[in-house]
Structure formats: C-alpha cells, structure tokens
Image 1 (spheres, rainbow, N blue to C red):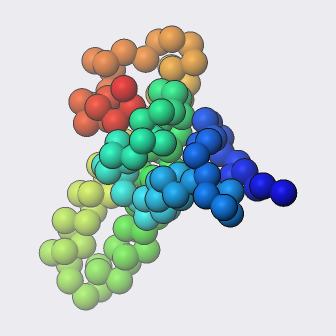
Image 2: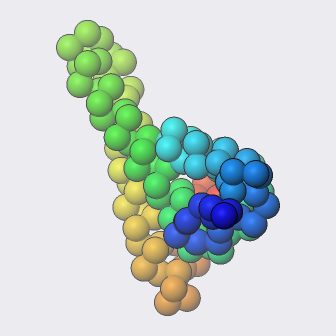
Length: 126
C-alpha cells in the first residue's frame, strides 16, 4: 500500500518507493530548518498556489524565529553585541510573520496586492 505524504496544500505527485517525494522531503527539511529565503528553488514550492506558498513561508519564518529566540537567551549573557544583532533579526522575522498572517487573510479574499508587502516576500509568494 503506497503512503502519500499529507500536506496542507498541493501534495507532490512524484514519489519514490516509500511514497515520499524527494523534492517535497527536501522542501519540508528547508521549512523545518527555517530557511525561508531559499524555498523558491524547490519545484514543489513553485507549483503551490499563492496561499500554499504563504503558508509554507510562514511556517519557515516561524521555525527560524523559534530557533533564534532559543539562541538569543544564551547570547545575551555571553556576547551582548551579538545578541543585539540577533535582536534586530528577531524583530524583522516577527514583522514578516505578521505580514504573512495578514496575507493568509487577504489572499482568499482577493485583496492581496504587490504594493502591500515587502518585495522580498512578494518574490517568494508570487
């Protein structure tokens, strides 16, 4: 019996003998690793609907944010200068996360426009 990997949006149809798509698995690894800026290089990401891309990007940004928050606490005590740089990145990621949440609302209503979000995000979800 062939197992299909369940996703929120657009299940990849090219599968190996275990039932998982190698490309989809690679994409899932990138999402879990928080590598949100490199998602566009995966064909399975490119095939998703805009809403699917928004969700995947949101998941990756959230994962990156969680990773940095846990690292931030150790940096504050050991190296305050590095912690300050990381705090800037944390603020940026929180802003992107909030924008992506808004995109999840705007997209189904047809209200999402290019000029509403940073170019960096638009390039990922378009």
